[in-house]
Image 1 (cartoon, rainbow, N blue to C red):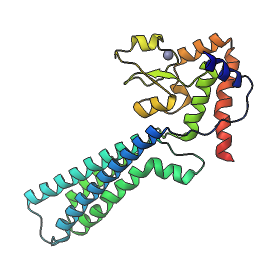
Image 2 (image 1 turned 45 degrees about the vertical axis):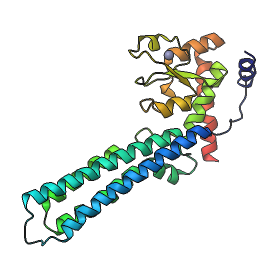
Image 3 (image 1 turned 180 degrees about the horizontal axis):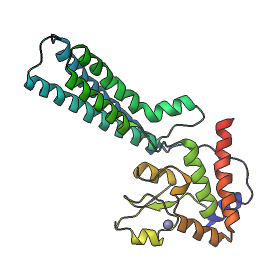
Image 4 (image 1 turned 45 degrees about the horizontal axis):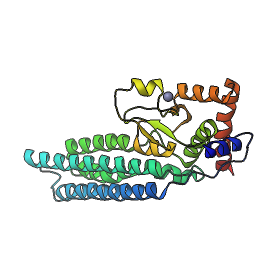
Length: 264
Ligand SMILES: [Zn+2]
């Protein structure tokens, strides 16, 4: 393949950082759709919270709510929680299609952890109001939901444009093109479709695409260098005649190139 040769040449001793990661038009559209639905669910979560607050607001602090009213309140808070987590799940999914750049640290943080902020908005006011109105059980449950919802909404594997670009660069250096393979459940991506680990995977379907495609479609693959299958990596390095040191160098070069763009 002519394209293979051409890109291999670029990796020869090329030190200039490649362009930053740019999502495809399709990925951008997918991200937009997931963000829209995510925000919609978050909005509905806040509506549920407002309903719970209206009930609490009308309550006399000196008179206990009936048991059935308490159950209704807790059910409303549960709906609030489910909507919050579903919204955050969609939001995190969107970020996998269209990740934030680490160049702007504050924006990077908020784009990835926005669900945690929404968790506080969707529960803290009702927690405070419940305690003011002396509905301690409801308040405690709302506080628990806030913590649980916040933890579920946090993104512990934050995707970034730089990470995507660095790994795409390494894959191109090794294979001449950004084409990788994975399964629905596997937490690694592979350079060869006949990799032993792909063969031993229970699923029958193998997905192929760019590194970014695989990240977008499988949330189990962490957006970091170690997600590249080590057997495939060794096999590709051997095919290129690289030593372990040369492989390590290529990895560091890919990481550093994009680290530099962050610091600029
Ligand atoms: Zn592999």
